[in-house]
Length: 253
Image (cartoon, rainbow, N blue to C red; front, side):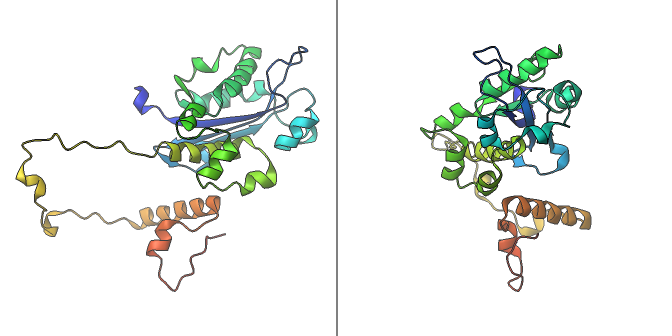
């Protein structure tokens, strides 16, 4: 598979500290991994395109980090250890391009966990790892996730209410990445010569083939609109444009 065809997966982690090994030699661990697969350039809310798990870090979680992500010792006491989920995690990400905000941080922690179970490095499984911070800095001088979401009009309500969470932050980063990279290249036509007159001719309506959506396709379309509206807490542009005026433009619960 060429680099251009790689499936993209947005990944985030929450940890017990800022480095895999602290200055006093103490090991910090991952307590939450969240991933979301991008379907082309579309953000998917389908469970099959998500991977999330809390982890028992086999050590206490410092109070200062609990203040950030609100994950306590009690919440992860009965969760699996990394060694118990490593196969499922690698099955989800293998072969993909990973999109990570401050990739050095998350990759460092994941590689430390992989080393503990003798499974090599993340780079052995993922042919490309993209740090989204340099992408953000091509447009903004500040690149932290909260700032980018505010600048790009992405709702931070859930993050403010619940704190950081790996899957939530992966979804927020996915939205940020898509908005940062949505501009299309400028098509240069000024140097084109010998353009056929055929390009200026519009075929008659009878020349077009019209394929109408099936009932199943229409039902799937409505299901996806429901998912989008539930996640964004807003009415989709499609329904605003095409819903009858008698129907109130409110997202479904």
